[in-house]
Amino acid sequence: MCTGSGKEYARLEILVFMCHLVKRFRFQKLIPDENIVVDPMPIPAKGLPVRLFPHKR
Image (tube, rainbow, N blue to C red; front, side):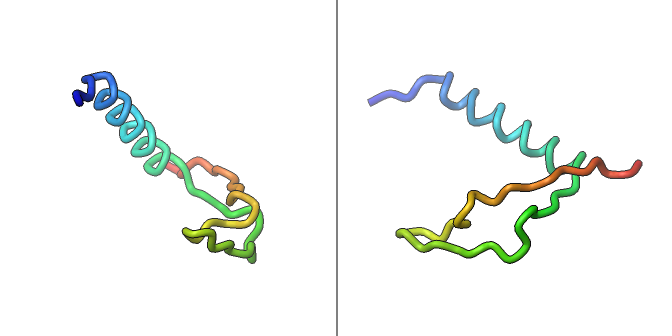
């Protein structure tokens, strides 16, 4: 089974986007004491909503 180059390109695009997001913004959880549900992996109960603040240059 072959995987196309488009799949790898999409993965690279996501990595570049996430890199820019992490470098340019500061994250703040909107629900600080949110419960964690384990089913089968631990995930935040309400999906971990965040607020983004630009880094000061």
